[in-house]
Length: 281
Length: 353
Ligand SMILES: Nc1ncnc2c1ncn2[C@@H]1O[C@H](COP(=O)(O)OP(=O)(O)O)[C@@H](O)[C@H]1O
Ligand SMILES: [Mg+2]
Image 1 (cartoon, rainbow over the protein chains, first blue to last red):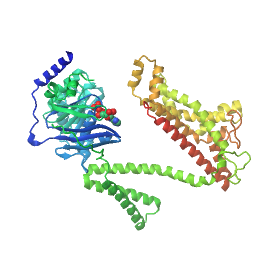
Image 2 (image 1 turned 90 degrees about the vertical axis):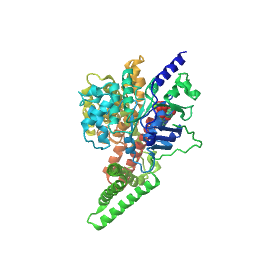
Image 3 (image 1 turned 180 degrees about the vertical axis):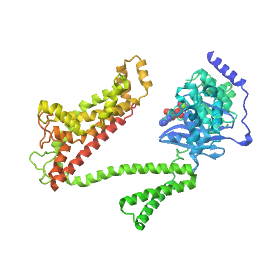
Image 4 (image 1 turned 45 degrees about the vertical axis):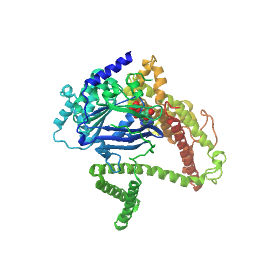
């Protein structure tokens, strides 16, 4: 009874949301993965994932731990190769161009496809303001008006009102939720086209989690968001599309993808249904 | 939003790895820089090995910068220069080490013979033909001296580190300062200290343990400082988790923190050993040298490799100098073997079999 109650509440959340059609389809898919596989050494951890991420949408990746969600999103901005022994196959296209093609400048890719990590990681040696603008320095970008950019990014991350009086203090003194929003502001400052978020709320309290979810809703007009989450309610609340990943002991696979409402109210695959209703094991 | 199941299993690939073309380019730049160094040395007053090397480095960096600049622009080119400079710094750092190894081998291998490891110098003079006598006594002596120094200094060093990082008592700051200052103590001072504190007033004789004590004085700060750094790297969550399970601080340090830091602590001990294995001055002062085997740390002077090497050089005939180089070679091999053994011990991952 309880299980169905949970499923019921999830689809109630999702059907209350208006389903967001992918923005202007004429502009094309922003980011697409084509048959992506990933390995760590000899261990095949991700098999044949193909997904489109349309501009202006939020896609949630759900699935049990260890099924390759983090690995998958790290292939989308070429962070996967950071790990020694990592290998991959398949294509990732950003605005139609293969990001793994020879001669592609990987720093430009990571500039366009930003990332927010699971644990808030503001740079400890920098003040709040320096943290937000760190990307400009790291990537040697020019900015006309740094103060405006600072305010805009903190505003979009929902943090401005809380820190505007102490921009020159260190970020470490903020709460976990504030630190995570600071990290979001930091990744917005370089104006990414896509933002990858790997369980951005798993280290945060419910209040901070809600604030971040609000932040995500505000961002979608300008940024494509891909968020990994273990929280079904969160996926239901923030995402337009949901993809379910699963590993049956072997490499992780994407079992099903669809509009979030579909996945939570009438999934096609039995395994998806078991997972979203909590009947998983 | 479509799901395409891959019919065929693709091969793992690393699109980010350097392609053969990239490698050929690097090779080309390398060759061009070598040619440039020859050309410059031939056509200008610059002369000597140093000139070749300097011109080569400068040429390499310039060509590398220019070619990356054309390909990916200024930022990428600066990155390439950064990488080239780091690589060259490593080359410069490694060159003296390699050249020492080569020199030691070239001069020392002539003095190698099987008798080195089976006989001592009891009835042989340093000036005798080199195939007579051996340095078994010195090897035994060095092992004993270092072993006892280790027995004394490792517990003290690691416990000091635990005091500094885990107990964090009132004296943490002064002790931390003292340990740092002590790592700069010259070996002869450690030797003189034991000489004045033990040899002169008490024993009035040379023996092994006095040498070991002096070596221990040199080893303690190295072991303590390295261990302190290693223990500091253990996240405090781990300590809290141990204590939160109801462990006393001592149990949680012994069961959780120290095992987590094991490989680093082993490295600390090795660095300590490496610091003292070749020490000569305190041994000359306290342990002396002897041509015959001595297993008793508490009685009579004791041979050691550094002492053997020093005496052979001091004797100054061609035979004795060859002996000295052979001794250096053996000492070096022992140190390298120690390093390798401890490295493999330390590298076994914590948490894996
Ligand atoms: N750095 C790594 N080295 C080796 N294996 C890894 C590494 N990171 C992750 N894995 C393995 O890859 C699989 C997928 O991990 P991950 O992508 O982190 O899963 P998820 O984010 O869905 O929990 C897991 O089996 C994990 O053990
Ligand atoms: Mg993960």
